[in-house]
Length: 425
Image 1 (tube, one colour):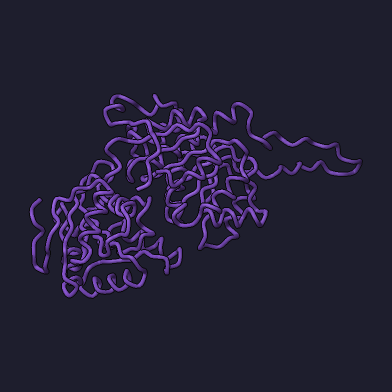
Image 2 (image 1 turned 120 degrees about the horizontal axis):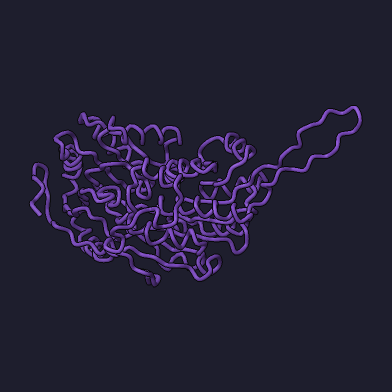
């Protein structure tokens, strides 16, 4: 495991009695946070918002589901308000009117496009769109506009949004860089940049793209890096772009609050076991809201078809689907039309779906980070949940090592056959 960056530790006890207003956020933002259901700040929000609003570079580490999106989203909007009040925005003044020649009509001068002042990068389309759904109402409450710049969808609507003028760009590195190269997106006025899931960006091979995008922004601008597993793997970004960052970590939140169990299953029993797990009742008596993670797209589709054949209301999410189909399938699951979502690791990071009762890992992950992110789809924001990892006998040693790296002590690690009830913890 890579050496952890030194961080200031914040605990839940440190936030007792705090309100979002105490963190330096204005009344319009406070109103929208209330409408979003954010009644009081979570530890990562209490830790990072004051430094971000004050203009410091920030590294924030907290488990998935702990409120990082609101932490950087609200902070960015409040920071832009302060910068605008200080006159830091370019191209905001009304254009000068020239005297018309004799016989000519007075024409309204053409205002130059309003270029973005903030940039938020995410590793996947789903995460970028989810960030926009949270940040957009916060931004609109004070008169700022956002734009979603992600791949897998037509380019023209995104170009038209940029031509109308935006204040905050939220997107994936590939599409953002493509629009910059096409001269449709000008990042030279970006004063605040956010990299969400920074370590995952590096793992996916986006480091060069992220570096190229950040080099287009204001030199010495403010940078905020957030992740559930933020470590020295982001060292190149930190050394090039951040100056004396405030590093924050939430104590006790790197590990999901879910209950963790490992089921050792014979190969010939695996399919039947997965059907039984996906059929488990939820806490209210109806079907449990379940996410099943698979390593490959082909296996995800195979498992989804198998569950559908058993009469289970199931949908899927993986890279072979179009963006429109992915959004429809996510909506089916989040709205309850489907009880089970079978997915690859495209759904492991950042997606927030309320009240997921159970995470089933049909394929064990290869590293502890992926485990933590998959597990983080349940037991979010203080709710309960369970994570069941299905492994063959040959995987026991590696799984124990991975759980140790993740800091997780499973309540059960043993044999399981079709028809077995889950053992008591």
